Amino acid sequence: MTPHMLPQTEMLRDESEGLDLRPDAEVLRLLLDAQKAALNGLDACLQDISRGAALMAETIRTGGRLYYAAAGSSGLMGLADGAEIPGTFGLSPESIAICMAGGIPTGAEMPGHTEDDTRTAEIAAADLRPTDTVIAISASGTTPYPLTFAGIARSRGAKTICIANNADALLFEHADCAICLNTPPEVIAGSTRLGAATAQKAALNMLSTLMGVRLGHVHDGMMVNVVADNAKLRQRAEGIIRNITGATPQHAADALNRAEGNLKLAVLLAAGAATPAQASELLTASGGHLRPALDQI
Image 1 (cartoon, rainbow, N blue to C red):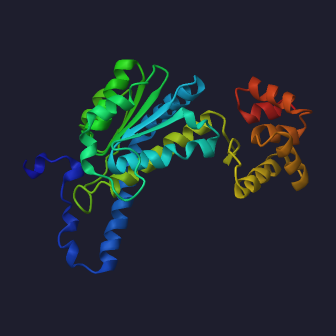
Image 2: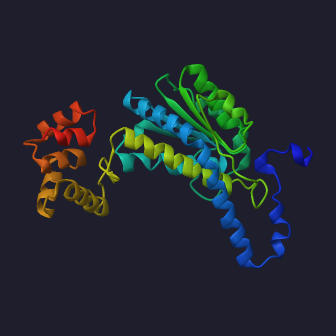
C-alpha cells in the first residue's frame, strides 16, 4: 500500500522524523501538542455527540442497556467510560455492558489477535434487543470485533453510535449516529493509544456526561444521583445537600440517612418534603429531575 493510500491513523507524521534523536523535552512537547491537536477534532462533532447522548438517555429511560464494543486501546477507553457511569450517575450496573475483544484484561497482557475474533463478538451480541444502544469504537473503523458487533446491533433493531478516527471508516456504514474524530497522524505511526484514544476518551466523556444531564442526574454541575458508597462520596453527598438547600451539616446528614442514601430524595427532604414517600412522589412526577421537584415544595 502506498503512503497516500494509508488511513490517517496509520500515516507517518512529518514532525516525527528523527524523533529518536531528539532531547526529552522536544519529544514530550511533540507528544503534548499532538494530544491537543487530537482534541481539536471534536469541535466538528458536537452535534453528532448530542445525538448520541440522546440515544443513550432514551435507552436508559426505556430500560435498555448500553453496550460498549471495541478492541485494544479503544476497548480500554470504552471500559473507562462505561465502568464509571453507575457510580457517577447512579445507574444500575446491569444497564451497562462492556464487551471488549479478548475480554477485560486483568493484567498487562492484551493480545492483538483478539480484535479479529468475530465469533466472540457474535456471542457477546447475542442478547441485544431493540431497546439497547451499542457504542462501537475503532480508531481505524475497520476492526472486525466492533464492526461485527455493530452489524448485529443494526440487524436486531438496536441503535448504534459508531466512533472512529478515519472519515471513510467501514464502521460508519452501521451507524445510527456516526462520530468521526478527525485526529491527525500519530507521533508514532499507528499507535492509536495516543492522540486517537485521547479524542475517543473525550468524546465518550461528553456522551455519557450529557446523557447524565438529560436524565436529570446533574444539578448545577453537581452529581445528584451519585452512589455514596464510601466516606469521601458520603461527604460529597452531604455537601451537595447543603449547597442546594442551605441545610446545616447535621440536617444534611439526617436527610441522607432518612433517604437511605438516595441523594435526590435527601435533597427534597432537606428542602421541606415531609416524608421519603412524598419526596419520591415529587421526583416521580418530575421524571427524576430535581429542579422541578424542588419547585413543588
